[in-house]
Amino acid sequence: MNSPNYPKSSCELIPHTQLNDYCDCIAIDKDNLRATLFQQQGDDRLYQMLIEARPHLFADVAVFVNEAIIQQQRHLIAAIESVIALPAYQHTVLAYAPRSAAFIPKARGVFLGYDFHLTSNGSQLIEINTNAGGALLNALLINSQKTIHPEWTVHTPAEPESAFIAMFQTEWQLERGSQQLRTIAIVDEQPDTQFLLPEFMLFQQLFERHGIRAVICDPSELIYRDNGIWHGDVQIDLIYNRLTDFGLEAPAHQALCAAYLANAVVVTPHPRAHALYADKRNLALLSNKTLLQELGVDNDTITTLINGIAPTVHVDAEDADALWLRRKKLFFKPSKGYGSKAVYRGDKLTKRVFEAILQGDYVAQTLVPPSERLLSLDNQKVALKLDLRLYTYGEQILLASSRLYQGQTTNFRTVGGGFARVVIIADEDHDE
Image (cartoon, rainbow, N blue to C red; front, side, top):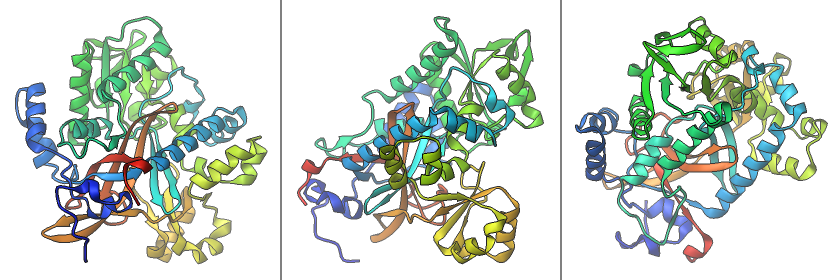
């Protein structure tokens, strides 16, 4: 691949439309990261977990995004929020939600994640997640890296950790008013085996630095008694829910579910948030003009949604022949899926897998090919796919991040890939 002869130290000379092809600025300072973590923890264990045990967690390059794309996405998020607030929308999606989603908490749900693929016309939303992981890891990445160029705008709060703490405090205040938030449990199945365990540990440290006692635990370690959830002899005020049993339906989670429904503990994110935002079937509604009109959505909002969301339909066995004919232009996802599990590109489908999809609960989404980020590996240019994730709370964008990968979906196993810093470039920052 022939590259323009841009000076390596002068990436500000590169036209902004070519930064993702030719800018090889280092996006992580490992020495600074080690020092930061050592200062917080007093040893190198967390650094070893992040960098040595998970060598492809952080990418070595930044991803550059035009400011207009972020503004387009902000406008889309506001449109989605306006539809989700409609009683008619809620009635429709709650009809196929678990029973726990009928309970209406006051908390909104922390760390909503909007995942986009970038296109020639801006971007397309491909997924919404309610337990989007990686926000604190990306804040750590931003705070522990070498400066790229001071004239470039980085889309992040000046103090992202402060914004995160404020979000949890807001969730607590919405439910409990002026009472003090004393204890938080970060809950996931067998957390010691989870790939993002280091992030759990970072959250634990963050909470404790702000005077909140925090534990990391499996839901089996929690007991519902005396009108509260207990971890040993400690009553838990708030559950930071990282479980992928979004409706708390599994037998092992019945105690937690009962406590949540009795308002004996604050849970965030909670089953209703997943039902309203993250069930994949919702995208089939949000990208369907006719259904949106039936809900009473105004034309401007409908246009924003149709232009910004990858067209999605719920898989119906009656449409099998048509879906099979169109399969090469489709991506199949389980309605309640997460983490790219059991997803299939249509052009790689076998008849056997397709039959299983028809018997399951799937959506089919129009394939939106991801854009690419070129980076230099062993003196060769290598193309990695990228997606863009916005972490939000309500309509507020807390953080923008990207994931670089090769293969069908994000995997954190790609050399050179992983979470990448997002740098927002305004039009006036570079000449075309």
